Image (cartoon, rainbow, N blue to C red; front, side, top):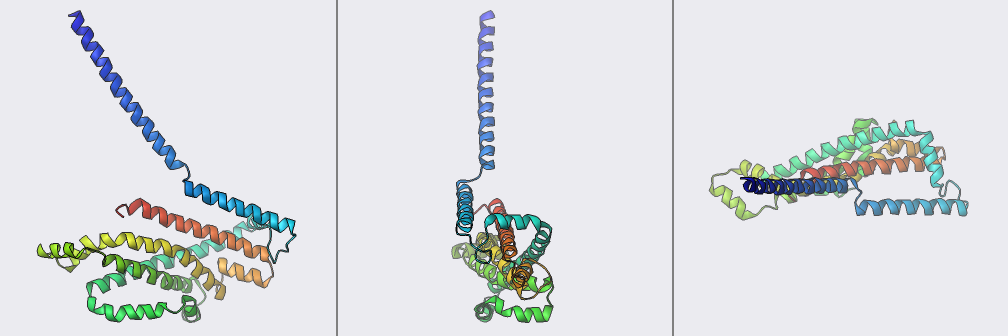
Length: 284
């Protein structure tokens, strides 16, 4: 009896120690994965090192050659101006971001809707696709005077301008994604009695989402550029208006301050859309 008890006890201890070991390894592996997620990627580290190198070279060049502010102000003076004007620049960045984001989603929705219409009604493609291409062949800024005349110098005109710029890019990506399905899969669904709507939502849309998301990611920077340029042509606020006013006042440090803030806002916008794409579009 004592020997049997000892054997069972030893077996229980070995089994328990094995479970503890596996649990410990699992915990350590999960912790390592979480730490790796928190660490910046190699590409991010290289980008930060590159920015730091450019900033150091810029600062040294401005100081060594004693460059005037209208040629190239020092980085330190630009950062000091950003700190001094942080409230005004923050409000201007918020307005520009609001216009860019509003136009971005409006244009994305319009582009995807137009792509769905052309997919569901193939006969309309011969008319609408050349028309959209002809309209986009003209730089979107050329439409700015008309949009400002029709909708005023408020945020509405900037939202519409951004929507025009973003809509065609998303439209082309969405249309290419909807057409990218395997024809054999379409024929198979039709053999089971699926209509056009069922094929669209169950086959074409999932296939088109990755390419559409890529088009939306590319359009983030373009939306900021169009919003800023349109503000420079006519606005009551925003980063473009700030840059234009600073040029009139010959305050080139303020110009560079607004450019720095605009670049940071564009990076944040791009990074947010890129994160959402990687997070939710996982079937590329």
